[in-house]
Image 1 (cartoon, rainbow, N blue to C red):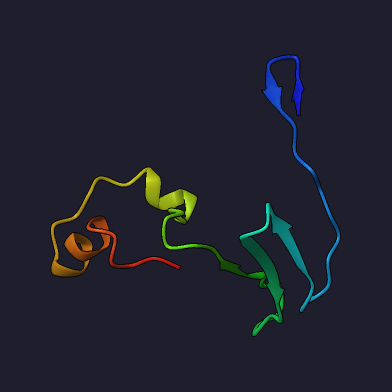
Image 2 (tube, rainbow, N blue to C red; image 1 turned 180 degrees about the vertical axis):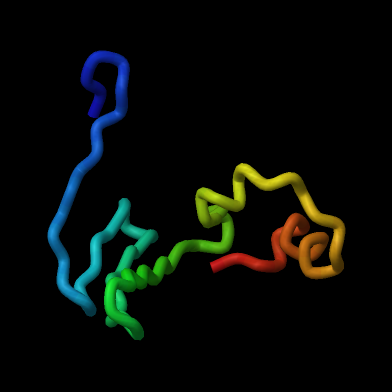
Length: 77
C-alpha cells in the first residue's frame, strides 16, 4: 500500500499464541512474555529469507567467528 510516496503499516491486535502469515511461507507469532512489559515475537521463514533485527542493520560488521558464520548464511531463522 502506498500513500503519498510512503509505505503504510497494517496494525493488528494479537494475543500470545496467535500468528500472522506473510504470504504462505512466513509466520510471525506472538509469544507469551517472560517479564512485564516484554513483547516476544517468533518468526518462521524459509532459509532463503534473511531475517535480522533492525538495530543490527545500523552496526558496522564485526569479525568474530560467529559473525563470519552469520554472514555466510549459517545463522538463519
